[in-house]
Amino acid sequence: MPARKRKPAKAQNAENSLMDAAEALFAERDFDSVSTRDIARRAKVNLALVYYYFGTKEKLFRKVLSRRVEELSQRRVELLDAKRKSSKPIPLHQIAEAFVLPMLEFATQGHRGWKSYIQLNGRVASSQKYLKLAGDLYDPVARIFVDELARTLVNANRRDIEWGFVFMVSAMSSAFGSIGRIERLSEGHGRSTDLRKACAVLIPFITAGLTAIGKSGRGRHPASPVASLGRN
Image (cartoon, rainbow, N blue to C red; front, side, top):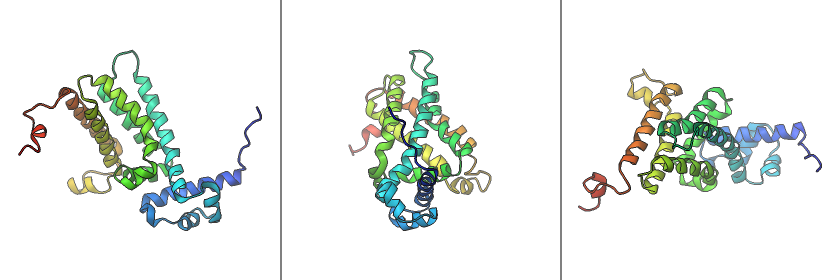
């Protein structure tokens, strides 16, 4: 088969510049407040190139997310696979590590674009609008982790496990996207930028929550507060 033609360096640079500019702007502002003109201006390229490479702002947004999600997902699955030393279920804390630590790795060692992605990821995780635009990009690796959790939490209800995964994502997004909250709570002693310290608390926190789901059994205890909600 003939070799695939590679894009000229100038074209590749323009395309990457547009994605980098869009990523930074989408992290700073709401999707609707960012125009293609803003993106082209930030990238210092002709506006027509936005449409040439991506077609629409929505497709550009998905491309911005997909390049990070693909790399992040690959690293997460690699770590998860490394934990499968036998047919035994993977311990919960190791599943949590496989999910969280790649984000820490890219946030602390990756280039500055990852900082924009992490901020943008916080928006995506908490907005129905963003989920409609690109939420499906996260689904393949999410299903892998939910299935792995189900192998470990054999006595838990599948729906409870799915909620547990959602809470894991939310806790991680909050930890990585927190801007100033820990500083206020700690009266200046804590730092939102100290992600290693955040993860040292985050992973045991996630593990404890998942463990509780596993201990709850397949049905909620009739005497639990949750089970009694709506009866009064």
